[in-house]
Image (tube, rainbow, N blue to C red):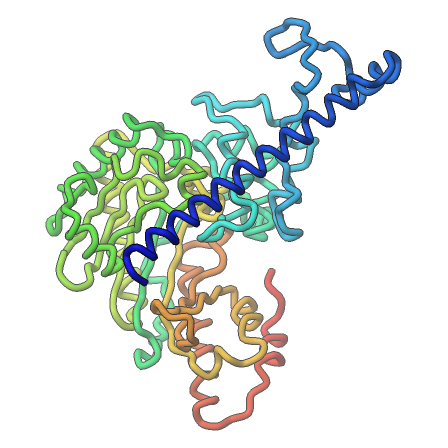
Length: 448
């Protein structure tokens, strides 16, 4: 297309956009005037009835305590419109008008309100990218989990399937590597191992509600703690060059800029102020990384190429224990609840707040009917890896499905055994066996 043609096309698009906007506005004005005209032409008794129908009462008390005749204002009309949310929406299911009325005027001691929690869930009803965690609900601070438990508890139970279990009455953490399964997974099928622990610090609001001064204080504290580690260094996003930032994101060592959903929840506020990253090595793939204020106050990450699950977990365990000691030496600690475990902004990331994943090659098995159900029965989740392509690659990010009600060692062992089962089935398919994956999934039993 020539330069002149492109300019003409662009002008046409702008003109069309302006026409649509003006047209919508004119239609809105036309409808509004039509309603007003209908009212004005009504007899007095009909007019009074119409006014009461619109407002419910011709006069009422406004929030400032004064009587008003503004018939279009209704103080009770603040319940979120969830009509565009799908039938599977947990927010639509559990944020009922009754629950909303119970919680709408409550707030935590730090001032966190219900609207702060649900903002991400009620925005972008056509679907946000990436998915919204649990219904797009995010806690504004640790106290939110008790103040708004009428909403959060059902959401947590729906996701974690654990609140009814007796063993959840007291959260237990176990980072002892001696308890890990010693089963070695076939490295020919595993590209990459990654484990992440999410943590938040006591006394600070969580990402949806934290302010600049608090966020900067969190960064200063964690940056200071990182100096206790003998290797590596910390760098703030504000100190990075554009080239350095792009390189780290491309290598998947650094979190990307916030998307529309993170911005709608408040987690992307003031970006990139107060965010940073620690790496024990800046060459190739670091063994230990620390992401600060990306979503939660802290994500501690351990990586390795291949399938050395035991080695990755050992390094992760050592790193989080070392950091915890550094925090304690400075009078700080992680937020932890006796029943819900470690608390963070997303109700997904509570309990152990662990996500342990393996990039596994399952070219044949991944295309079999019943694969997704089999993975769920193994208490895992599988995300197809696209590698910037929409074609099937046969590579999957396999991770623990649960985070609450079990210890870290329990979850890692479940992953080791589950991935081992998947690799064994892939090998059988490679050898030409005819395997009924759906039948095998049924034998694994339902998820409890």
